[in-house]
Length: 214
Image (cartoon, rainbow, N blue to C red; front, side, top):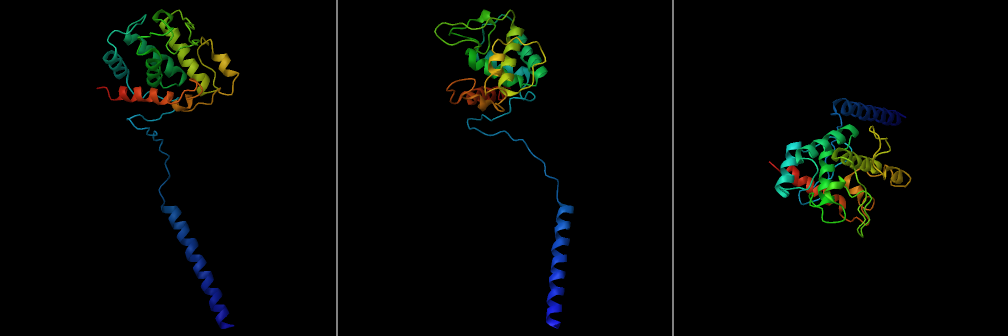
């Protein structure tokens, strides 16, 4: 009988010790902080969300463009175009510097050479399907940038654009299962570009080169 009492007392004591230790660990624990580190894809390119703030500066975007193509075919100055990307992107919550990197990818650094010509102010191949089909035309460079940002939005969020919709393909994307599904730039693979293998990664590589511009 005495042994059973001692055994029960020991169990109670051990339980108390474990409970006390547990509360002590919780009380002294440091708060958990989620760090949104970009995924590294190699070649100095990292993954970023489509929605968010700019990472590169306007100056880096402009310097990188002029370093890559000193005479871009544009209807406005290169500086003005970069300003439009930051204005339109920031309004809608799209990273403007990476959207600009996508424009460089789509236009061959504003050399064009495909169906689209500079006078269309079409910086992302909207409406082009190859075979000489030129796609959409926009009355100004700023409207062309706005259409580009809105087209990105169609894939990245279900939130309606704040500005009047000028993207002629926005409502088309809205009716598909791709509407609002792309959270990162690599999520555009197989959505924006088909089959699009490595499409997002190419944009991110350009963006990585922009970030490296001094």
